[in-house]
Amino acid sequence: MSLSIVDQNKLDAFWAYCVKNQYFNIGYPESADFDYTMIERFMRFSINNCGDWGEYCNYLLNSFDFEKEVMEYFSTIFKIPFEESWGYVTNGGTESNMFGCYLGRELFPNGTLYYSKDTHYSVAKIVKLLRIKSKLVESQPNGEMDYDDLIKKITLSGESNPIIFANIGTTVRGAIDNITEIQNRIAAIGIPRDNYYLHADAALSGMILPFVEDPQPFTFADGIDSIGVSGHKMIGSPIPCGIVVAKKNNVDRISVEIDYIAAHDKTISGSRNGHTPLMMWAAVRSHSEAEWRRRIGHSLIMAKYAVDRFNAAGIDALCHKNSITVVFPKPSEWVWKKHCLAISGDVAHLITTAHHLDSSQIDELIDDVIADKNQRAA
Ligand SMILES: Cc1ncc(COP(=O)(O)O)c(C=O)c1O
Image (cartoon, rainbow, N blue to C red; front, side, top):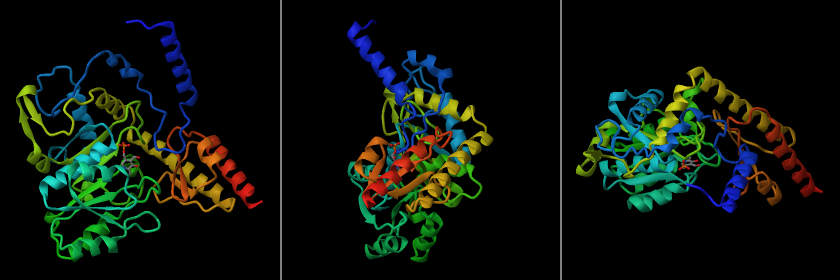
């Protein structure tokens, strides 16, 4: 295969653009400091993980062995015995959440999904795709779910099988819903534990909380039924991907036998990426627990540094416990465009992902926010 000179030049220009902007990201949660050179050679193969990594599949070029070890790893850090769990490497946090909601709906076909106003926008889309009944729950000002409103809405609708979508780190504010509070409140209105489903969306924080000293409750040991995490966020990967972990006995209920691949199918897509499980495998195999702790500890220190700098300049900034998302008032357009910030309503945030080795990029942004504040005050 060869390209025309024009096309080759176009590719070369894109390469230069990517190299220049590799570490641009301060507004979104994708770490850019990954190194997967050890698996680059597999890009020449059409690896396809259709079906279940736990079974024989007629499509020989699969990376099931690696996917299995990835799932062993995540079952350990999310505190569920491996043999009682099942999950897979998805196309991203959205598919992971969709899988969790799908399981909840299959378990409770008449159940309503309750999710807070601070939930990621993709969940409204999942609700439509799954044609699942849903109710939007108010959020507290800090981004956490409003538990009073949750219970009021469950009670008013006479719901007996609620499906709860809990945020373990909201997109904009990094707020963590208190799943102990949720479970206690639901128990208090007389709904037994077996009668509702609890999914945890831990897109970013799923790879933070297992490595901090005092994590908020978020695991299977704390009562969840499934959890989704993005692979391209805290871990980092060149191709978006995610991980979902659920309880095996719930997953078995949605499994169907497919003669075409001579295997059972439980996943949302048919053909599945075989390279991203390799990447996730390389990531978890090449970092010890101490290294994850160091990497995440550094990001948390950078977040605190940013909050302190904002506050010292008289700018209100907030960062939840164990979060690397720093929220501050939305600056003028020139600032958020220059730094490619994510904005929502009257706030913006910066996220101190792992490639922020020093504070230079954070300082550059904060300097502009302060200059903007002074300009507006003048
Ligand atoms: C809290 C939360 N959930 C879900 C998602 C969607 O994840 P993905 O982009 O990996 O599909 C995001 C993405 O930012 C998120 O912040």
